[in-house]
Length: 99
Image (cartoon, rainbow, N blue to C red):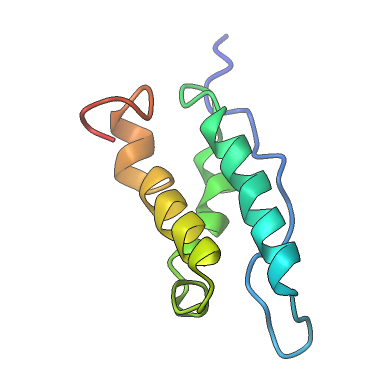
């Protein structure tokens, strides 16, 4: 039996602030860095795409993209490309021509 699509993303922190829960800038950058590190090392053959989908949507959120911090924008745009559905389905590594 194959282990395909059974590995879940371990990162489980919010990256979008809300009225009830504000994430300070430094903490947001640390969270984005942590998410980036995990996404950079996932095995694309075994990752459960559902576990990545929430963060794909969050990285496309206008609040994150419109953040005035260049650090936040850099992480958001980089990860937005990395976790796109097309990327996870087509390429084997981030160095692939399809990435």
